[in-house]
Image (cartoon, rainbow, N blue to C red; front, side, top):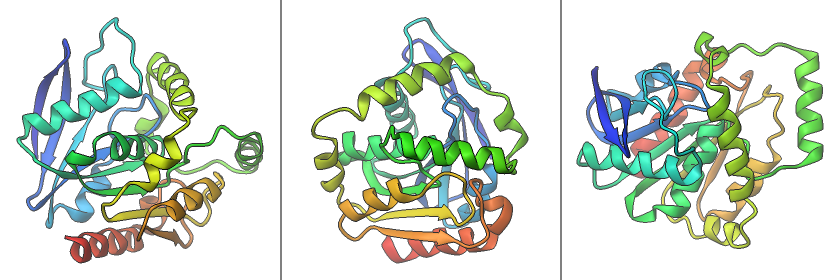
Length: 240
């Protein structure tokens, strides 16, 4: 694994690269979490060149005073792509990172080779969804990587507010329907987050596949790593 700090708009972002093959960017969730997706990278790093990063203000990456929104996230991802001299890549995110990957797919189609959503939550800000999620939280404690418990609350708050504004755009559904690259949605059967927003998005994208992973919660690889590995590798081998 190669670790490198990349200059991005007055900050330095921590990145890590492993493997060889088709380029993939992995995006962690939160928002506001540092990278925790090495276990996912290891599932495909014999067929993909996988790049991970700590978002601005998180983990090893620096922060600045200009604020942080969806636009800045996309810009940072583009700076990473340009630094590694990648023409197009698969953008693959987990949880909120999957939602950010969706925004990237809409806004940067010329940089996109493919789009993968792992346990995404969609473009909704829905009361019923929140109620179902809150009921699920009451009922059980989800297994998750230890690093997820430590996140930047300021970055989290800023990005949540920015995301809520972003999804209000009148043409966002049209933008989703214009995604033309191979697209995969995977979600856990036992995830306490309702899956209907993801299934709605998948129905808008021509040829997109949505796959439920049996026995899995939000962090799918912690309960059913073998099935996630199978689906990710199948997606890569059959699409490219």
